[in-house]
Length: 94
Image (tube, rainbow, N blue to C red; front, side):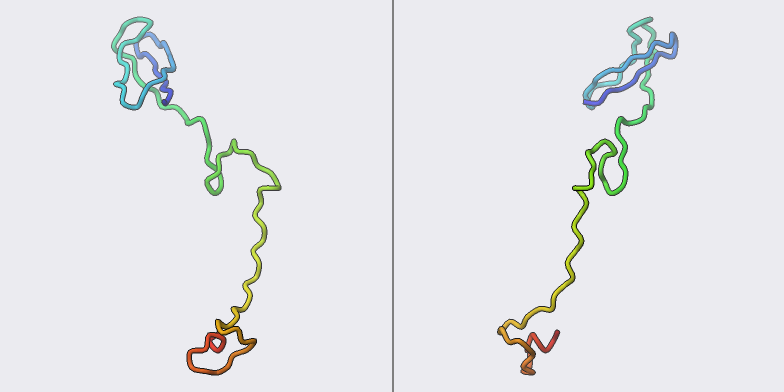
């Protein structure tokens, strides 16, 4: 459930409230009773950086990806060491 920041426009009372997304917003100030209690815009509690990882995630040298291996030439389906020259030979297409 998200935490919303509220502030009263009449008395200045501020309060953080844990509410469901489906709950109606609060309007009455709990301190003075005025109908001037409104949600405030606040910054989120996390930051997204880089390629989708949270800035608070654990990071280290061990998490770096291994370099990719160079692609090797595909061997013919028949198992021959070299192209036979026959029509449709897989080794001839390489």
